[in-house]
Length: 195
Length: 148
Image 1 (cartoon, chains in turn orange, brown):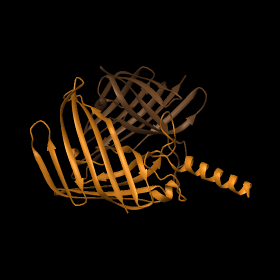
Image 2 (spheres, one colour):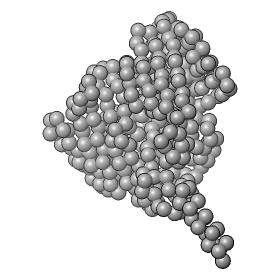
Image 3 (tube, helix red, strand yellow):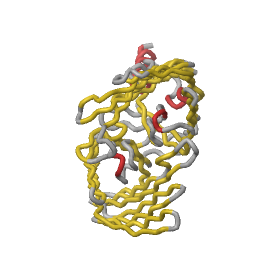
Image 4 (spheres, rainbow over the protein chains, first blue to last red):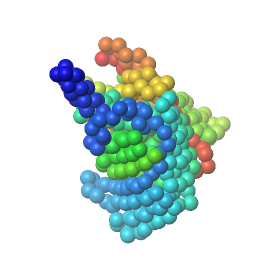
């Protein structure tokens, strides 16, 4: 009996350390991270801040809030506001393919390619981050390529991965330092998806 | 970096680069016109086991000096593990990310590891770097050889 309890406890401890990668991941899950990620996801809510900094100081920012079918945005410097229809869905296959479709206002953006987890290096745990290598992205204009951060290769931190819920985050990530105006562009975003 | 090559292509032009340890030559074709260019070129790449990297790239009159984080891929589906090295620049001390080649004009970029020995590293990258609303896009292919 004592042996059974010992084995059960050992199993639970191993599971706890191997399953929980993101800060809000379930304590224990019997499905692998790949199995939990695979499938079609719809955006339930999200937010995005694009910050523009010159010589280390905040110049201005654009702040967007996304709901299931609607978005709002505001420019912190001018007060200019935007709003309109919004829809975002993304699917992952176990073979490592992804595709997404984003409708924002009257524009749409779609993309596909391969996804992968990143290994644990430095402060990052194994499979804590998700990378997207696009084969094709099209339809959008530069400034509203929000999910792909206007790049063909992009990375997100997985802060929560449950069977029916996925949260992807980016915190103050450098997008580019532009030679056109010497401005540093940063992105902070959080996307909550449900199945 | 001891040698390398790169090819930029968009619907109206293409540029074929050849690199040695300290310079580049480039054949630039815009429409039917072909130009030959050359200049300084060099890369110092320092990859640490702690997950950090630093990069200094000299390209003609411009220099980019930056640092950030790197990581291997995990290998999902058809992809082998540790065949890709993903780089994320998080600090630029000098220059601009938008006008340099090794980083594919971006702050996040990925290279396929073609050869990795104790004293030699060969990596390459390919894929789109720009696209517009009309479906036009530019592709950029690079290959670099580094030695210790």
